[in-house]
Image (cartoon, rainbow, N blue to C red):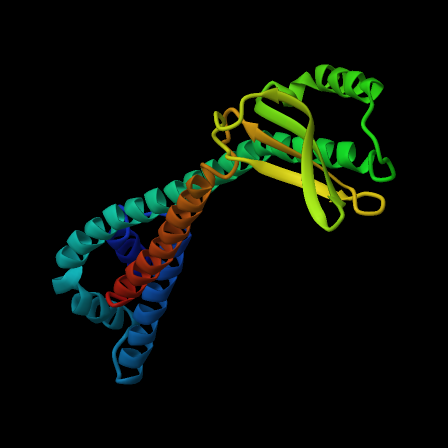
Length: 240
């Protein structure tokens, strides 16, 4: 059956890869089946092989040309797969970098919560408290450097009327990108302690759409890769 092997190898000479190996095996099996049928009809093995190859002989050049086209399609399929993987990796890198950067906002929020919680059982804000608060801000400059406005506020209800007093302020309200953020909790009796602040630059989730875009592009490319790969494979089978 060396003639059949040479014929099949010639048809697929310009292609390679796992799929082509399968297709070559399918064509070889088809030719062998044809040979066996011809032998059952009284042909010798040599005659059967020659007749089987002759049936493909007229199509050989056309098939080679078409397979050359499919080779370019295979290259396109590989490009789709590489591109899909690249966009997926970029999306993951962007996601991680945004998470790391935006995590600083969560740290600031936790810091504010802890500050308010520390006054949950207090009823007054003394001069010592003011100094302690100023010291806390300086010690946590890593987070406060991006805060354009900060205020520590006590809200009370006296004779049915609610009053609020800014016990400590730093910076000017209205200059930050984030807008006013307020965090607080109920203290003792009718007292309510809370903080309000604004970020100078507020990038939190501003670029969230980026990794959605990269993941979406990656998903589309993976789908295209699967569709083109399947279509290419099915079209190649036509010639076997």
